[in-house]
Image (cartoon, rainbow, N blue to C red; front, side, top):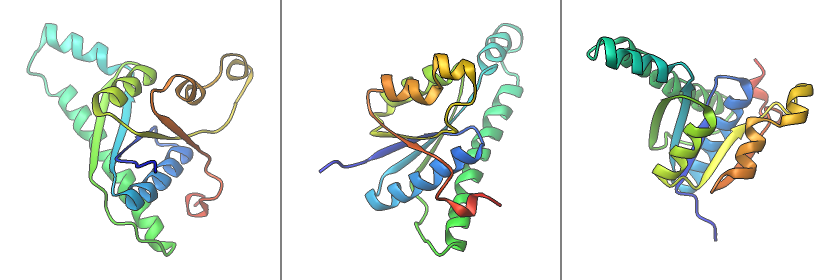
Amino acid sequence: MFTICKLLVPFDGTDTARAAVSLALQLAHAHAAELHMLTVLPRLDKVMKKRLTTKPHGTAVERAIRDNEGALEAAVRVELDRARDAGHSWGHPRLFTHVSGGSWRIAVQNLVEEREIDVIVVGTHGRQGLVEAFWGTETEEWVRNSPCSVLVVKAQGYPYLRD
C-alpha cells in the first residue's frame, strides 16, 4: 500500500492553491503525514545577494521570510476553519513552512529532493491562453518531471472556497 509521509503544497494564494491546501490537509489527516507549504518570492535571490554584499545584517530579507511563513501558516488555519465550518474536522498536521527565492520549478524540485517529499498537491486553473497552450503550465511541468507523485486539484468541489 502506498503510504504518504510528506506532502508538499506550492502556495501562491490563489483559490486553486487553497483547494490544494484543503485536499492536502485531508490527506495529511488520513495518513498522519507532514505538510510542507512552499511559497516562492522570485526577487528574493537578488535581494539576498545584494544584502550579502552591501549590508549583511539587514532585516528586510528576514522580515520578508518571516511574513511569508506567517502567511503560509494563516492559509492552513483558514482552510482548517473553513473545513470545520463545513462539518469536517481534520486536526492540525505537523506543518513546515518554506520560503524560497528564484523560480518555482527549481524551488519545488529542491524541496522534493531535500525533504524526500512523497506527493506534491498542486492547484491548477487549467490552460489560460495561447502561451500556456504552446509551452504548458508549471503544473504540467511538475507532473512530467517530478521524482514523486503529483496530485492536481481544481477549486471545483470545494464549495466553501467560493466565498
